Image (cartoon, rainbow, N blue to C red; front, top):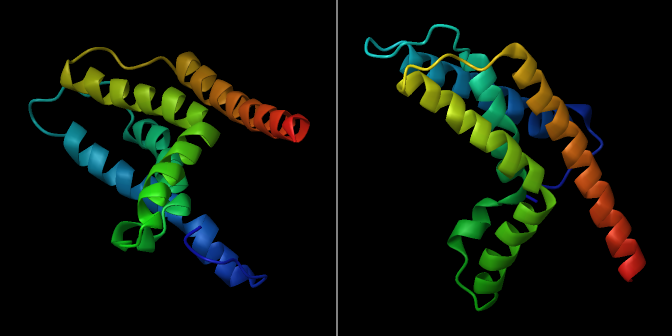
Amino acid sequence: MIFSLTNDPHDLLLKLALPPIVAFLAGWIIISAWANRQDAEATGFSPAVASAFFTPAIFITYLLFPPQFFTMSSSSAVLTIVLIPTVCGLLFAPTFFLLLPFGIKSLARVQEQMPAFSGGLLFTVFASWLITQAGWLAFLVYALAHAL
């Protein structure tokens, strides 16, 4: 983890609540500026929804990759460089394989001037992501508990 957590509520707020908010708002601003250019047909496109597709993956990456990860020079660095992304990909597979493709497709729909996703589909994607992510983590915990 990037940091150690304390019992101080300000510390928890600063390290756990603020980063996803900043990632969401930054994504919203950047995607909104991109979608509002003159050659884009963004009718029905929501930059907030597109940003919401990317925010969980950005937050997970923020939590799991310490700054020291990029400056390692020891012999254990290779193991760490391979192990951390593999574990991250395994634990949060539903986030990376469910939300990111929909986020990318929502941006591609603006570029290709196709109609935006329907609200029902978006609700289904986010609901299934939450259920799948929780179920996947529960399955991994159950499998590890019975394997040991």
